[in-house]
Amino acid sequence: MHTISRRNVLKTIALGGGVILSPSVFSAFGRKKDKLGVALVGLGNYSTNLLAPALQQTKHCYLAGIVTGTPAKAVSWKEKYNIPDKNIYNYENFDRIANNPDIDVVYVVLPPSMHAEYSIRAANAGKHVWCEKPMAISEKECQAMIDACKKNKRSLAIGYRLHHEPNTQEYRRIVNNKLLGNIRYVNCAAGYRDGRTDHWKQKKEMGGGALYDMGVYAIQGARLGTAMEPTAVLSAAISTTRPEIYKNGLDETTVAKLEFPGGITADIKTSFGENINFLDITCEKGEIKLAPYSGYNGIKGSSPLGEIHHVYSVPWQQARQMDDDSLSILQNKPMLVPGEEGLRDIRIVEAIYKSAASKQAVRL
Image (cartoon, rainbow, N blue to C red; front, side, top):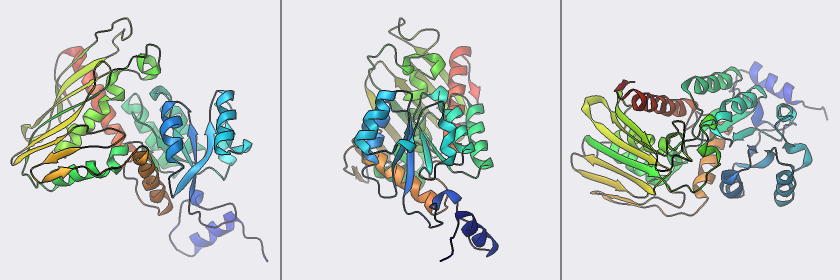
């Protein structure tokens, strides 16, 4: 038999005028993969307790590698998930991942201040990129991530699990189809009491603060709840009850009022000081109410059209998200939550901080 190289297979497809699939969905022997290998970058709580267990449930991707700066974690993860030594990296040798055909996707699960760097390095290494929210700490960084993935012809998805979630999809269906008439007003809040004092979420330089972390959920609630993009931040304020922890302008709690086309407004609140999680959408013909509306273990709500409550358990949301994103890559289709979606939220985050500092409205 003749040896068929991966390069020759791709060249043959291109010359034949067929659909050119992304090179990373092919195995080293030129066969199209049916499951993608995922490397988790950063092995903190979210990777350890949610993403890694979810990758044991996924149908279209699997845990192929890890990137960690902690040798002890490398050893324990290797043993627990049977990860080969060649698929274990640290932050110094990360770029060598370019030469590893086992890894198709790099999932960046680091503090927000590191998202842009490792997403861009992953794209430059020829890997598809999944990045946790918030996408980055500035609109400029978000755009650089998008540009790097486009330049390298790699997919970019942001880890907004709720876009993949059936309860979210149900209330969006009601809103988008105006089944209860036009939207009048939205009120949304997302937060929890964080008892930590020295986590990255309490460090401004690492992308900490309530607005970047839980605040993007509240912003998403306003945007998805109106099915529109805001035109202005009318007002905003940040505060803290623990100035010894949330200092130098770091927000423990942020509130803002957003304006949408037609004069529709949304009030949002986010906090590391209290447990809050709800989305109320006031429509012409009644209210859609969800509480919780962004919990890992499920969402529960109601509307005049009936109950909104598809039941599932942790970590189903994360498994669904990663399977959906894997299928988009395997089928050469657009991502459900591309980089542009993450950028839109960070643009609003920056405007909220600007409004809070200036005590004035900020146009978007």
